[in-house]
Amino acid sequence: MKRCNPSTKKNLLIIHQGALGDLVVSFPSVIQLKNFFHPIDVICQSSSGKLGCALGVFSKFYPLESASFSSLYSNSIDSRIKNILRSYQEIVLFSFSKFLEDAIAEITTKKPHRIIPRSELNQKLHVGEYITRNLRKCGLLEANSRINENVFLPVNPAQQWERINKSKRILIHPGSGSKKKFWPILNFIKTEAALRSAGLHPEFILGPAERFLARELKANGYENSGVNIISEPDELLLLLEKAGGFIGNDSGVTHLAAFSGLPTVAVFGPSDPERWKPLGPSVEILRPELKCSPCFEKTEPCAEMSCFNKTTPEMVVNAFYTCRRKLTNLS
Image 1 (tube, helix red, strand yellow):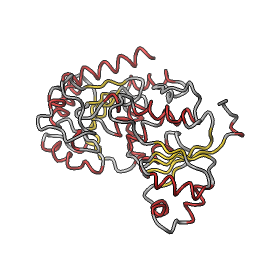
Image 2 (cartoon, one colour; image 1 turned 120 degrees about the horizontal axis):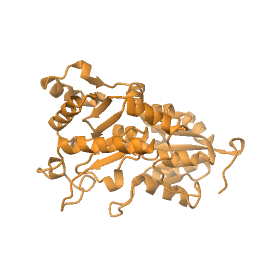
Image 3 (tube, rainbow, N blue to C red; image 1 turned 180 degrees about the horizontal axis):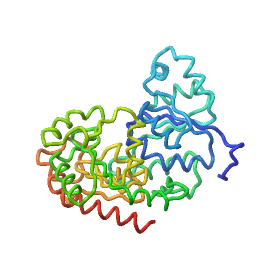
């Protein structure tokens, strides 16, 4: 496949039913697709679509939660979704649903490229690389395409890294899409205190579903000035743009921080970093070596949660400084 001039590129629609982290891990592959397709639009959750468009990954998004899209599962498909689907020359569908694939093929008279959203559990393969391989199999990427953690960096990365290095604002996100992936909040509090005593300016960020953590932070002396409760995607992007680093659990926000180029520490517990490591130029993963393998996608995590309990705030702080040194070397 040869790279095309913008005027000769086909348009492409991506349909992604996953959460923020699942979508962000596909961003490096989507950016490679831009060599061959324009525009690249997406049907996904509204909050994720707004972020993807603001970052320039997608040109336009359609809300997955709309009634138009839901009608694909009914006997009476909305004419608006029919018109949208028919306006694209290629469609990539990230879905487990063969029914949805067949419904789209019937509307468009062309079969979409359906990709199962993640690799088999017995495959020790990062989901980002898995996506790239499948896009190659579909003939949408060149045969030698590989996942590239630096593919998303700006035109002048040195300038961006200089700004990051100067910022003392460090974001700490103690939440995640699943409470099973929460490193204990008291550990984040101790991490914040260590960074603050070193002259940095750490701040907590919480999503709308994580407001209950604000009560625990307040009980430990943190007032509103040190806790940001995010309700809109643009608020999150503004915080990331002004930050000098990020610390969090395995979450969509952590994936986004790594993608944006921030020095990022991700605390993993029952989930598997080999499959879900955030992609970015300066990322450190913390998960202790254990006899048990990551269990999040297989079964219920054990009560002991050794995968979290053996990670200390000191380890997280040290990993953060390692990330900062990486960035200094790159710049």
